[in-house]
Length: 143
Ligand code: HEC
Image (tube, rainbow, N blue to C red):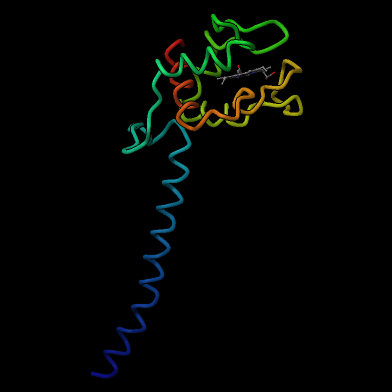
């Protein structure tokens, strides 16, 4: 009896470790899958995640973005790039756009082509996460 118990108890340790490892790997895979766009991510809806409202986003756009990107989203020479039509807007998801707008793209960024800063949140620090999702939904709706 004793030897069997010992045998079992020593077997349990590696099994538990394996299960922890599997759980960690599953979490890591889930985290990676969430940010990529192809492959197994056919279900794009995330339960509980707030989606942007394009109508509210139009107001955010008018108030903060139109000065540099134009009221018609066609861009302004020497300032913001066109946002409709825009390959960048088309290629990025609403959440990815919101994340981009939050940080902007300074002149020091190698991807900057205009030689002008895209300021974080378009230079309006009062915009919250929902505002950024809303304006992203508005941009997606125009592309
Ligand atoms: C002070 C001017 C300014 C304001 C205000 C501004 N932007 Fe920009 N934005 C820029 C510039 C300049 C670029 C291009 C940077 C570069 O050269 O890559 C840009 C780039 C972008 C891009 C990437 C376009 C692409 O093709 O790479 C998006 C998306 C964008 N802006 C969204 C917004 C949104 C949404 C707002 C309002 C919340 C906003 N911007 C406000 C100046 C501005």
